[in-house]
Image (cartoon, rainbow, N blue to C red; front, side, top):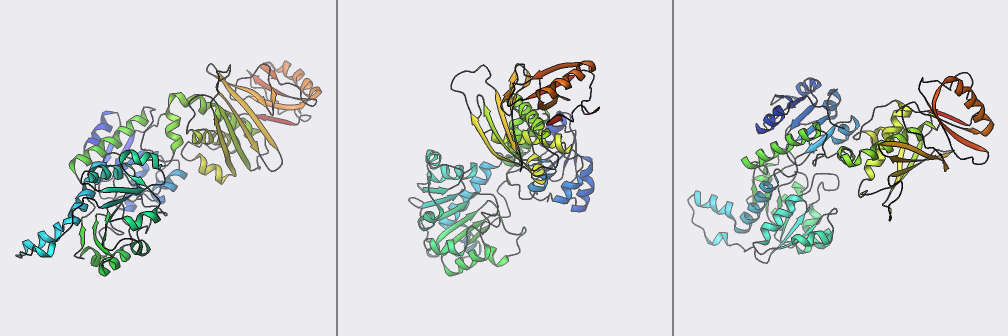
Length: 527
């Protein structure tokens, strides 16, 4: 599923290579820097895509105004200037350039550590003022000191590699990085409570999210060795600025290197003017090399998405990138069709809970793909909502649908039907299960509620499914023969009842002429 991106607005000073790459790939690019929020709200209506850095605040109002907006690209790592929840609700993809400024941010962090260890900034200012005070700036080596790295992603790892060359011991924490993984790049992973008493230096490399806001606070300082030094080149707000100032004044914190602030430009001037603080104006990505890399990285992801290829920087929809892979397209079709059919079997007012079991090869970490695709099918069938892989989970929740579980299983031996999916849907009063599979290039309906079809019908638009007693189905079929149906498939009989699946070349409507009054269930797909 390629993204149709024909027009892109660049609202900040992004390296010219971004516009060049997009233009060379058929995208009309407009650059308008310095737009106010209201001006951006009016302007965004005309574009399929938006490229920003950190200054543009992409709010819910702006996203709502972008009636044709499909994607917002952040030429950098963090996306806290973008309302990702609102973007998801509106079906707008958010992507970033996670690799472009990694080295620049890591190098600045390391420069902060070295500068703090040797009082370089203070000593330079003293000498420039005409003083020669060598004794005042007696310092410590980094050899043997412990560096605590909070956040072991790309930047945290690069910092670890560089500071290990100084002989520092590196410890760290990241809930997403297993201990057996971090030890491969020389970082001993441990819980935060064990880290604080060991840290001579602490550097943070996490996004600003509720769990990390004010992470470094007065309580943390009290648990650290006296004189601990703090470096924040990640996001303002991770370090509580008031608590940091108090710790600096008390000597509990021996120095801080800050590149980011709660407010930018910072209004907490007492902190940045403190003699033990090294401060820079958000320069983590401010190198020519980094700006060129993030511009290339974000624009090339746009091009990949336009071409129907996956993008590595998707922030708000892991299922979207999975859906772009050719190998996953059969799964997308099966899940959507199964969702549509299952949804058709319930009264329109029912709230539904879904569980999915999948049998096939190479299924690892694809749960979000199946759940989102099934929800897209249900939303289309029951609510006539054209959802996508970005907003399907949000829209489904609003309409009372949820996926309770996704179970992935790879067959131990090759099966005659290696690609199959069972979708079980429950309401407050009833349960139905749908077994679908792929044969060649066709999605087939294998069974409903455990009743298998001897000749599985193709899952396609206007497929009609019915359940009833044998005599009711026979009477129905007698009427349909006169209507010129193209195919009829019957399930096995269970407790005197069976399922019937009907395709009609002339779109006969069995929901008229009282044909279905004697049936238990009758439903028509809108795929």
